[in-house]
Image (cartoon, rainbow, N blue to C red; front, side, top):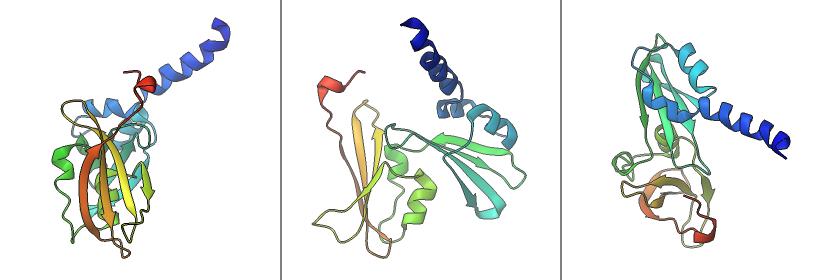
Length: 164
């Protein structure tokens, strides 16, 4: 039995070593190659103004973190931060932000749904608030992809399957 579990345990350990959580210790000035060696391939690479890049390390749809590692034009780290939090969500400006803005700032959502009471897609991000509560953040887009409203809500899980 233990012999059959060893490959899974080893894979889990190796995946943890190249985890986006390691982005907390990425210092400004770190070269892009070192970031990739440490964190692995990003979920997405986004071009930034001034010829910089953002390496997005998202744990969506199951996780509750998304790390953005911003690089300057020379490929050196400018900043590294976890963006799925109340402060960053409050930066969203309905009527001005677009789907592209949302995905540039927060990475891909956990899911995109439609609801009968809204004429457009609804992007859902999973996150955890400062009290440790599991949350959703919903971003409502109109058919043209403009943010029309955005707000948090509680994520209710079945306690039987909550192993924290």
